[in-house]
Structures are given as C-alpha cells and as structure tokens.
Amino acid sequence: MPHRPFMLGIAGDSGAGKTTISAGIARLLGEERTTNICVDDYHKYDRKQRKELGITPLNPECNYMDIMEQHVRLLAEGEPILKPVYNHSTGTFDPPVYVPAPRAVEEEGRLIPRVVVLEGLLTLFSPALRSRYHLTVYLDPEEELRREWKVKRDVAKRGYTPEEVIADIERRMPDSRAFIWPQKEHADIVVRFYRPPGYNPENPSTLNVRIALKHTLPRLDLSEVLHSAYEDEALIRLETRREADILDITGNVTPDRAQTFERIIWEHLGHHAQHFDPSLVGTFWDKAGQSYPLALTQLIIAYYLVKMRELAIERGHLRVA
Ligand SMILES: Nc1ncnc2c1ncn2[C@@H]1O[C@H](COP(=O)(O)OP(=O)(O)OP(=O)(O)O)[C@@H](O)[C@H]1O
Ligand SMILES: O=C(CO)[C@H](O)[C@H](O)COP(=O)(O)O
Image (tube, rainbow, N blue to C red; front, side, top):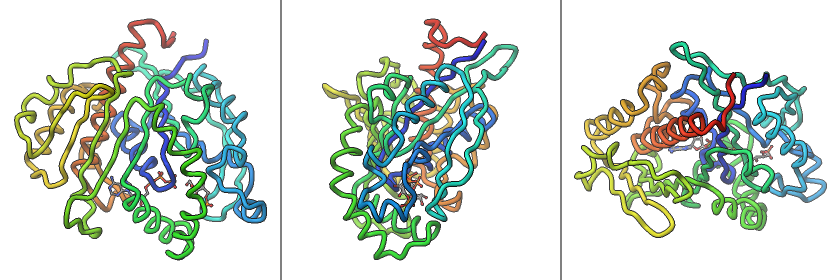
C-alpha cells in the first residue's frame, strides 16, 4: 500500500530564493526524510530551441505542464516517478532520474509521512497542481534584490555575463507578470526579503523579511512561539490584518536575540528537527553566507509544516500504513 507524503509547494520567479529555502527546510527535517523536486525540469525546449522559438521558460507553453501535473499527483499518491532533468550548466537535458516512492519514515516506533518539496517557476500555476499541496509558499523578494541575486548566481554558476542576465530578465518581464507573479495569490505563506536603508550588497545577512501568513492556514497559536521575543520590537513584530498575519523580522537583530528566538521555534519543532545540523540554518550562497532573517523564515515554514502534518495525520488525510 503506498504511503501518502506531506506535499509542500514553493513558487517564485527565477532567483527568488526557492532552492535556498527548500534546501534549508530539507536540512531542518533531515534530508533522508524529504524528497526535493524542481519542476523547472519539465521544460519542453532546451536553451537553444527557446531562443529560436522566442519563448521563455516562464511560459506554461514552454513546459510539459500535463506531465508535471501527472507526476505531482503520482507523488502525492505515494508512487514513484521517472523525472526529466534540465541541466542549467549546459542548457540541455540529461537522462531522466528515477524518484522512488516517497515512503513514510520511522521515528520513535511511529511512521511519519515523508515531506515532498516541489519548487519551481510554475509550481502553483494550475488548479490541478494546487489541489495536491498541503502547504504552499511564494517567494516574493523586492525586485531589485531578486535581480541582484539572479545576476550573481547566473554569472557564477550558469555561464552568463551580467549584461546577458539583465537582458534576459527584461525579455522575461511580460511572462513574469503574466504567469509567475499571479501565483502569489495562491500561497498560504508569502515571504518578502527587502533591503534596509543603506543596504550593502556585500552583506546580504542584514536583509529584512516580511512573512505574510494567510488565513488559509490553520490559526496556530504563533504568539506562544513568539512569546519571549514578542516584546522586542527591534527583532520581530506580528500584526493581524484582514487577509493575513504579518510577521516582520529585521536584519539588524543581534545574534543573541535571534538565537534565542531560533531556539524557541526549535524547541517547538521538538524531535522533528533532531536530525538537523543547527549551524546550517539560514545559510545561503553554498553555505558561505548566513542570515538570521533567512534562518527564522526557514524555521517558521518548518514549524507550520510540522503542525500541519500533525493535523493532516489526526484527520486521517495522510495514509502511512
Ligand atoms: N535570503 C537570502 N539572503 C541572501 N542571499 C540569498 C537569499 N535567498 C537566496 N539568495 C541567493 O540568491 C541566489 C538565487 O537563489 P536560489 O538559487 O535559491 O533561487 P531560485 O529561486 O531557486 O532560482 P532559480 O529558479 O532561477 O533556480 C543564490 O545565489 C542564493 O545564494
Ligand atoms: O528561470 C529559470 C529557473 O532557474 C531558468 O532560467 C530556466 O530554468 C532556464 O534556464 P536557462 O535559460 O538559464 O538555461
């Protein structure tokens, strides 16, 4: 009998930080307890063909959306898939890889559903995809920041010049607006990193973050988690609005305060975070940089994930035996 996993969908534009967040969450929960899939692997055309056709990878027409939907359904039902692989270094396709059935993992004599993290440009695009997730996240950094991150990453890792990356971002703009940005509406959690006044790009650890927790989420008592840091306006502010609870975390938080807050969330994650190396929470840029707002964002998403997984088990929505 297949085991149904917990499905987490993460969307956002290119360079918005999806891989950074997904990798952090997988490390938190234990990499052997998660299956991470990038849905950008379902591109229909390679880089050369896209150029010839004048189509961008952001356009659903440029992706095998039907196969993506079928594979997301199969994973949600606990089945294996044979996943295509798009190689960002060569701009072409590698042989497909076998992704085993996402079976539950044993923890203290109990079977816990595995977490399948699906991230990519179009993860939340269609109703068929959205219907499969238990929790959805949209990454929405300030546009200038996304450009800065994308240029740095594409030059270092994907063989582009800065001018080529900027020109490509501009070419993609109509498709960003038409296909990527509207997915924000469908996310339970929207994360926006933004620059403080006088921001120095050499020190991205000082970025602020605003996390919108939509009311589609169960009303978890976050105030209990935030309690001891809650008084501290310099660190964190929680405000309830009509459409969402807004959590603001500033980048100039002192290490001891951030670490206290991290520990509080950590304790609430309990045994779910026992396989994780805490020194890696909040790391970015191949673990060379570390940011408290990023660490707290990863912990808050993991906290909701663990709580919602417990709820789904209680309600009998996740079959593990
Ligand atoms: N919170 C952050 N603070 C500092 N740098 C970050 C943060 N999030 C992401 N970055 C940097 O931005 C770059 C892009 O991030 P990432 O690869 O996670 O984006 P992505 O959305 O997965 O991109 P793509 O869809 O194009 O693959 C990386 O170099 C990463 O180190
Ligand atoms: O937006 C992207 C997600 O990473 C990529 O740019 C897209 O997948 C195509 O990659 P490239 O044209 O750089 O080969």
